View 1 (tube, rainbow, N blue to C red):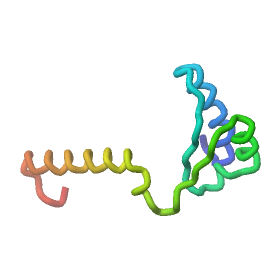
View 2: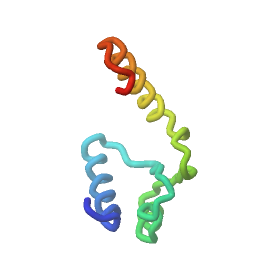
View 3: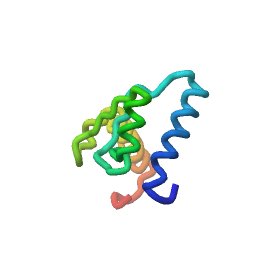
Length: 91
């Protein structure tokens, strides 16, 4: 995907792929308040496919708890690895 204008077509393909691979439908799409997910085409598609669109508050990654916990785990693992290898603190 090279342009944001391609997001709608990519999402439709993604939805079909998810349905084929897992057998489940997308019920909710959570996105930031980016314009690529709020176009008229997207809004019509959400309604047609019975997809709820939830938008997160701008600049609040804390709302995405799973990702934040994984990021914290990776950060702590890296910090411990650096300490175990006795590398300089700048790393």
